Every structure is written in C-alpha cells, then in structure tokens.
Amino acid sequence: MRQFALLALSVIAVTLLTHSPLTARTPLDKQESENKKPRVVILATGGTIAGAATSSTQASYKPGVLSIEQILKTVPEIEKIAQLKGIQVSNIASQNMEEGIWLELWRTIDNLFTHDLCDGVVITHGTDIMEESAYFLNLTVRHSRPVVITGAMRASTSLSPDGPFNLFNAVALAASPNAQNRGVMVVMNDYILSADDVTKTNTVNTDAFECPNFGPLGYMRGGTPLFFRESRQTHTASSIFNLKGLTSLPKTDIVYAYAFSSDIAINALIDASTDGVVIAGVGHGNYNKAIAAAMERGSSKGVAFIRSSRILGGGVDLSAEDYDSRWPVSFNKSPQKARILLMLSLTLTKDPKEIQKFFMEY
Ligand code: SIN
View 1 (spheres, helix red, strand yellow):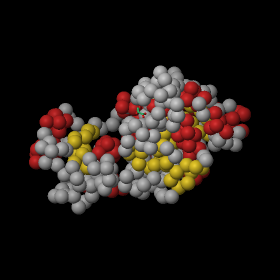
View 2 (view 1 turned 120 degrees about the horizontal axis):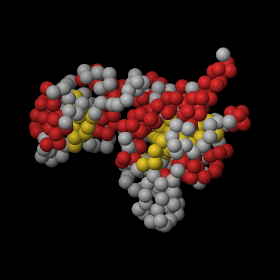
View 3 (view 1 turned 90 degrees about the vertical axis):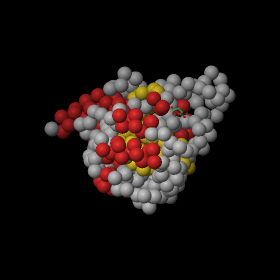
C-alpha cells in the first residue's frame, strides 16, 4: 500500500512537472528529497522580470523573453535557501493574461499542495495585472501554504534590474514557516503586500506597489520576513470559492464613470450578455442618471451590478448615497478586484444580498 502511494505520488509529480512543454527542471530526485531545505516551485508566466532590451540603459524593452531557467541563473543565491523547481506556465506580457492561464495556475498550485509536492509557490508575473492574478488566487487556492507573486519594473538586461532581488525575497518568503496562512502575497521592492489590498500606483518606478487602505503586511530584510499586520479578509484555506470542475468563469466587466458619462458602453455590455458589471464610480461609488437607467435595464435582464469607486483609497461602504441593496457596494475592492469577486460570487449565487455579504467578507 505504502509502495503504491509512493508510486502514485511520483507519477503525479512527473505529470505535473512535465505538463508544460517549456518545463525547465526535472522532478525532485532522491538526493533532493533528503535535503532539508524547503521545497519551492516557481511558476513563471512572463512580464518584465523576464524582459530584455537591446542595451542596459534603454527604457523600453520586450517583456516575456527569458525562460525560468535563464531567470534562475541570474539569482544563484536562492539555491542556498530552497530546493527549487521551475515550471514555465506561459511567457506573456501580463496585459495578455487569459482565463485559461488563471485556471492553469490554480490547478497546478492545488495539485502541488494537495499532493505535498512543495512547501511554497512563487509566481513570476508581469506587474500590470499582478494584483488581479494575486486576488484571484487569494480567493481560490484553498490551502494555507504560501503563494507569493513577484515581478520587476526594470528588464533583466537593465544596468540595475530589480527582478533578481524581488525573486530572492519571494523565494525566501515562500520558504518561510512564518508565511503560512497569510493569504496570497505580493513581494515587490522589499514590501510584503496582501492580495486583497495591493495595487500598482506607479507606471514606471521600482517602488510601484501599495496597499492604499491597510498598508503593507510587512517587509523582507536579508531574506527574513518581518510582519506587522495580518490580512484583514477571508482568504485561501478559508475561502468558500471552489473551482473544482469549472472549465470557465462567469463573464464580468467594468464601466468607468466620468463627467457626463454616456450609457453606450454599459448598454453594449448588457446587450452582449455579460453576467455582471462593476461600476467604477466617482467619489463614494456614484454615477449619473444615464448609467443608473442602464443599470435598471440590465437588472431586468438578470445582469448583476457592483458599485465601486475609481478613487484609490476609502472604498465604497453601505453609507453610499442612495444605497440600494440591488447594487452591492465593493468596500475596499478596486474596480478590477471587485470584478474578480463578482465573477467568483456568480459561480455560487445571483442574489445581491448574498453577493453583498461576500464583498463584506473577502
Ligand atoms: C507586464 O505586466 O507584463 C509588463 C509590465 C511589467 O511586468 O512590469
């Protein structure tokens, strides 16, 4: 029985680690499994951390060029802190992220943790969509082992690239016993940021990420995490959202409010049978009469709506102007995160009161 279990485990390991045609490394061998260092799997998806330019001072570059093997060669120091395996899941600029890649990331992480194939996961990712992938996994990876996402603002060929130290920090965090049960974390520029609050606040600077509502979870110092707060919302192992058996997700979109907003975009989405729309409202989640009328129309066709705000901090709470329980408010969720929570909420219910509870909890 024990022999069978071991065999089954190694078959799963080989399947997982050879699943992608771009797999960079071999499965754990005997010598490695006897090694006491924590086992960290790096899932590479592309971005600037894998980007390259033609000169070391050039500002523009091409993202998603280097393989995970090439990236790992730039940070030999991480071999000292963890047993590493790299899996190339994709090699894209993150604006081209697809639902299929999110589902693949979720499936791979779920398999790795379910079958005890590693102690922590690091995802290398483009910074543009990083906060969205982090929040999606924060709501769907139902395990307490660490999942850490990192990337870079400067390409690998830069005179002073930030990717190598970000990756070192991410692996050190994923390998740390102190990182368990803290939800999915983003590590950038030495900060540890919670998936539920992190957002990109600068388009080019290396100090590009913040948690505008609650502040960072902590920071990395010499490969050691120092935490000064817990994640505030329900996440990962305690999440109700279960992707098992799902091959696609509800379609949800965002409509931006602005001075004399038109109803053209929102009505087009309703007519294209979207399942839900997040309004990126002005101020405390407000929008004009044209959008309000379109929401009434969409509601009669079964489209769900969320009131969020285009403002960076403060969120939208139950004290919003003309609060109507048919349109749940987003609390601290940015429009792009509210869209993900709405998408997952719609896998369970269309009842706005239930959806409102999810927005209070997650
Ligand atoms: C991307 O998001 O893939 C490009 C930008 C970056 O990684 O910083």
